[in-house]
Length: 167
Image (cartoon, one colour):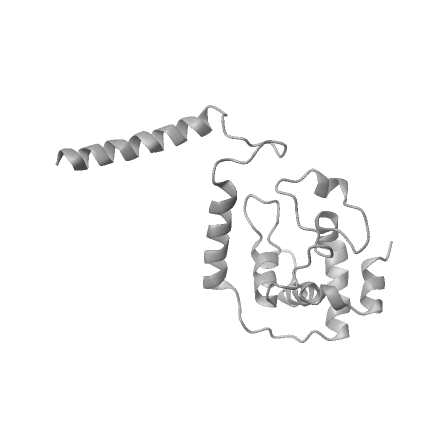
């Protein structure tokens, strides 16, 4: 019984310490701050567990030129400000983010499945600045941009020109 009480009191002390860490402003919250202990590891662990459970495995669209063209439009309008464009410098928005967003045409996500990219664009990723677009973009556009990113290392010149268009 004494051991159980000791374990419960120890757990409460740890929880109280975590509460004090956040309540007193000791936790790093600025984008220029260092990471919290285990922040990256815990966030990645939670994300990958959720992806294994929820990401779609069947892609309802093909990576043909019309879908890649449409995906390039979606990307240019919604993603480029954070994730960049091919052979273009990092934007001021991306430079100020923490964690830094991946430059998707440099650090391509072609190793990710289309379903994983679709899940991330649809749902977003907490504590990263990555918004979920499920309430602002139709499903077709989410699939099209996901197809584009899966094939980012081999997009046709027409798609490249859409990405680099200025308005």
